[in-house]
Image 1 (spheres, helix red, strand yellow):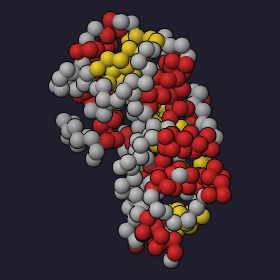
Image 2: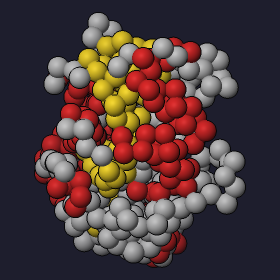
Image 3: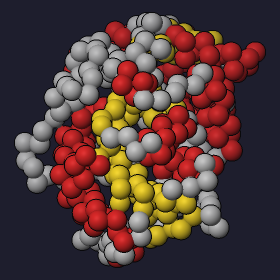
Image 4: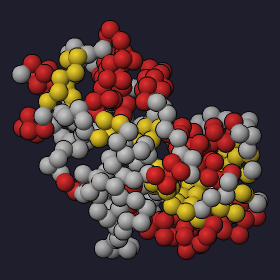
Length: 341
């Protein structure tokens, strides 16, 4: 199989490439070339910019539409105009286009159980390209752009939180560092503040499982739309902390469970100060970690053991340069104060 990965050198794309190579497929990547290609002798790395308005634009892809790719896996599409440009350019020479979207496309995540039929967000201003405040609606518009070009040759995958090695967002990585490698966070207390309650639902997907799912969909030429994360209720905050303590062993800090009122009063910012924490006081996000992923599971999405994800992430964190990481998380002094109180 000949596979083109748009993106493909940093996080999800990197794992898609590695999974495809393990399966014996021929891989081409298209990126800005800012990250060193880990496979210089095994992958054709095209360099350019997905935005045709930014030189050199899509010139490296100009002839790619006639190269007979079996599929495109689009890991880096955020703006409909930009996605439409590459999708249209490649349409004549590609059998299937797999677009990696997000569960953030749903217009209403206040309730648990959103499935692929739920309404998606729309843009009040269709011309906006301001990604941060309109991320979900822009992703939904990108989905529509791909579907217009490829019709039944379209596959949409909507991941939840993607975690694992090479995740530069450091959200899941914060918890791995705090318990398994606390020295990476500086001088930390032997007690770690954790947002109660332990039964809080968590939902994410190991990047390696997601990459394998994407490649398998291409291999089987499967169309449709899929939410892609762990099954509803599979993981909780309590299970995550217990797994972290188990992996860390005797050196693990003691978890101190604090309720949301205490954390809010101390000015701890949800999702940022303590990653993965979405308080009940923010009902608009109540369903973000309990999306229905039954369709993807039936189509072959696997969910590995949590300890595997923790161990792999810990190994990567220990090997990388962590300078500048976790600048906005709960500070050591405030954590010590909260844990002591």
